[in-house]
Length: 417
Image (tube, rainbow, N blue to C red; front, side, top):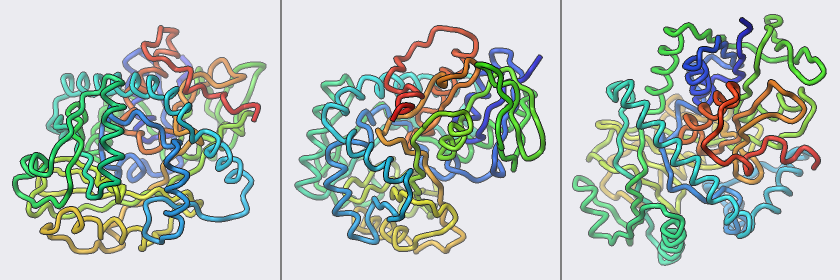
């Protein structure tokens, strides 16, 4: 039996392999990295059905212009002469409309709720001891009148869309953080959100897949494909040719390069983010987003991870300490008594999130090819949507009906741009 090749060993790729092996497929996962540290291990670990608005939305243009002026801002585009970047920015601008947001909401809501249920099913089957799953909701904290207005408007939109939501006063926020002073005007609480330890989940999934006979090949670059009329017959790599039955491309911000090898456009840019883990003292209890700073905070007992920024850049390996300092300085702004020291360079995680120009992932069959599908472009929602993406791709391979509407995630939606 020919294997199904999953290109990309991040959390989306591993969940794709997970559901494929459940369907009895022989699976090989190949990755250009070491299958140890990537975007799947250093993120906030948030599972967020509340995130129903895509990154490309009306407010991002005006905010983005002002943020570009600050070296510590949450959003930055590295200026450079790059045709791909220019095309991506033009598409992002065109998609940053209220019409696009309204069109996207039911699709994001559907796949997010599906993914949350799959996480609950996963915990029921495998237990929670390994991954520290905490089904405690998410707080969106705000300090300013402008932030309050923006978040309350979003809470109305979420409620109209069928998302459970509560508007909390400062005192009500404080009740959720009994150990730590919270200096905010108030917050929005999404009780159906959750978080987990991303690195623990990643390591658990890797070991599980290996125990089930899935082959994981690291430090292996894809150089091309051996093609028939409408099918890919083999994946060509730096270590030779691998024949295949199906190809699932889950290669994160590099998926656009894979699409180019297959003869179509898949606009994608890497959005660099940073995070670091600190001792959790006094102990924070509630996963939160510090909205004005665009910083996430995820507590895991005696440790807590802070992360943020979206830096559209081609400098994958560098660390912009000013952006890290922006994350760090936000901590005392929201938690004035939190004990935090600025992290050393070797304590700072960095990763390139795969960003499509409309803020929606690419999920489904690839144009031109009967046996190729993509699951990429999830931006900051990779971990949140990974189980749903993997299950959808596995169902497509087996010819099963997919329970989630996929039209907005069409892989070929920019083929003729």
